[in-house]
Amino acid sequence: MSTLDFDPQTLPWADRDDFPAALDRRLADGTLDDDGAARLREWRERGFLHLQGAVEEALIDRLLEAYERAWTERPPVKLLVEGRGVVPFAELPPRAEIGHHHYRVMDFQDVEPAAREIVLHPTILKHLRLIFDQTPVAMQSLFFEYGSEQRGHQDFPYVQSAVLSHLVGCWVACEDVAPESGPLFYYPGSHRLPKFDWGGGSLAFDGRDESRVASFEAFLDEQCRKAGLERLVLEAEKGDVLLWHAALVHGGSPVTDAGRSRKSFVVHYSSQTAYPRDRRFPDRPPRVLARHGGRLYLPPAPGLGRYARAVLHRLRRLLGG
Ligand SMILES: O=C(O)CCC(=O)C(=O)O
Image (cartoon, rainbow, N blue to C red; front, side, top):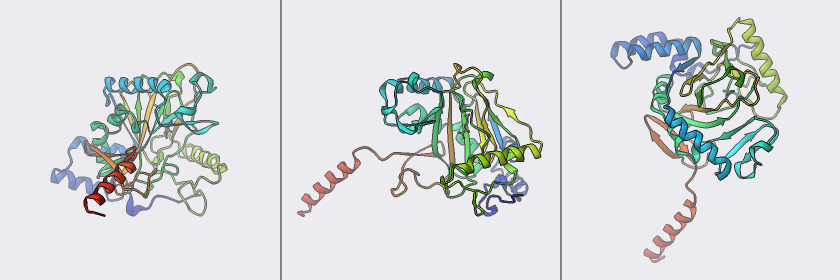
């Protein structure tokens, strides 16, 4: 049986063996209140937090309007579409011609202010700061229109920062979730199960051998079954948020009414130490948007290269070069 696990030296504090003592110290010196402590204990035990009504409906409505507009305006973002891979919005056929519902918009926050406001939402960030005990940084987002029907999985082998355990998934309900729309499911406590060996003792998927994905999912099914873990289905109302641990096993239930949407916005966060640069532009210092104690990296400003060249040109002329 696998005994692989995260590096204990770099675990977020709520996952460490000395957490109970650290928590007592923080409560005693006043740097943590009872509510924060209760949240953290729940996180450590169960591996998730359900924050009811955390995001304002008006803000979600702005996101939904932008999503609908995107199908006609085709902004410069990409979608991940089952059977087609990663496709620029501009190159996709109309929605009805895709033929199935397994598509999601990637990194909508690059172009959409409402998405940025949700990614840097004060209530979400307050909880992430508790969990990481440092500045949370958004790594990526996915907007789902329909249930994903994904098999049970953990996110850390796929969404990788420099420290695999520095990862939290955040699922924002953009409408009330109907049972037939394929709700999210998850196994409380599964974040403590032994980890899958992707090969040579690696905890991360290197993208090479896709057949390992099915073995990973079967391993997790088996681990949850053997541990007798309960499978919960997320009953969420518009504006609710579910935060889940890097290693919480979760997925999408089967959709039993194909016409029923299940609009949701998922953001994966890491910490400032584990994710200091934008994964898409690792060679450049990131363009940071910082708000409410959290961070998000914006793509490089368009035309910046040209602007920089123009400034250099003027400088050279001024200096007589
Ligand atoms: O929303 C879902 O159905 C699954 C989302 C998910 O598993 C993920 O984004 O990691």
